[in-house]
Length: 336
Ligand code: KG4
Ligand code: ZN
Image (cartoon, rainbow, N blue to C red):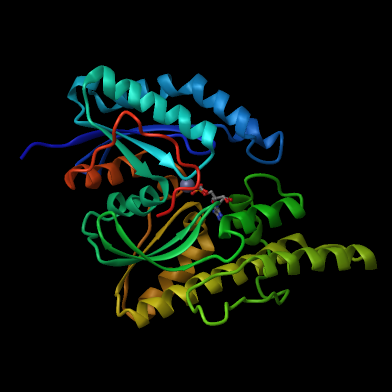
């Protein structure tokens, strides 16, 4: 059987990325140009600046992905591209580039849902992973607990009612002056702190055992700081972020384990930028070990935005016979 090689493009937020993935599981190349240094100046992603940076880098990044894979465009079987969710300007750059290349080279075009891409990073991480499995998706824009019933087929069990987990990390980091992006900075700072120093709320959503809510926790962290400022106390930043992180991790792990029990699913995966969090990885590992479940999570670089995960998702779309037309458009609020 012939190997299927997909050139994938990802530009939904602040990384311009391209990759070549073989048969959905083998990464032949994975190029990421991160705009973080640019956006750090503004404390967050500025959509217009992101769009311009994507335009400047997209051709270079896609060419590099082919070169690194040792392939020409003619040797590629299809082009996959993130078409949502994300920022409309940045998405349009990737979609336009993918269409142009696919049209010029006479290759099929496959639009990919970015969140499905995050889940698919697990197929790269674990060659034996097959649906069905439970996946905790935690990124800057999304927090979902889903049953992956088949390739490209998801049943959403729970979601956040307000902030995404990564958004909470970013907002808390900003409030204590750790800067952007907040998740990795809190992860590092928390190692110096005591996670039991401050007791923060673990929110439950009444009647929806798998739903999440992080805005109350975020407010509690802000209130704690306001109170300390008013009384002139010094804010113990390491303890504060360690305690915040523990509250987030506990809720993510307990909801996931509850769903695994309820749905009798012994295979668990994690996806998205927050799945790179060292405390979450460790806590989930311990919980799965104790319960006898199999746990998969991508290596750090495949948790945060990248094109290899899009190439994996595109492969399964390709196998299912799904193709996009030349009218493929960016869909900023695309759902799973
Ligand atoms: O998946 P991603 O790269 O982009 C989205 O699709 O949103 O996720 C980015 C999010 C940001 O909120 C970032 O702060 C968070 O993932 N993040 C982390 C860590 N690394 C990235 N959060 C906690 N701990 C980390 N180590
Ligand atoms: Zn993402």
